[in-house]
Image (cartoon, rainbow, N blue to C red; front, side):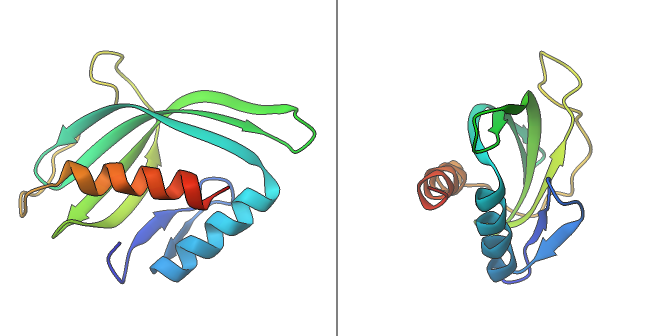
Length: 125
């Protein structure tokens, strides 16, 4: 992540900035809910954005289902690091998300995003 990463606080609303705040948000989230988020598809949007279609299942710790849905996690990548993440609704089954224009500045490394998902799932447990 970039030092000034901008990250969606999906369950609490708003955004947090900086990796330390993202980690604190994740820790708080995992204390409140049992979440499983599985990447389903990746859609490159321009040269610096990727929309990841995810299937997320959220339960309380008694096992009651809170949510079972597909949403988009849109990442902005800058010099191989995650600069921003926002959650967005999906609109088109064939595209997987709302497409929007993006400025073209850098190349994108798929391995960066794959590694993020592996780490986030392991660190969240």
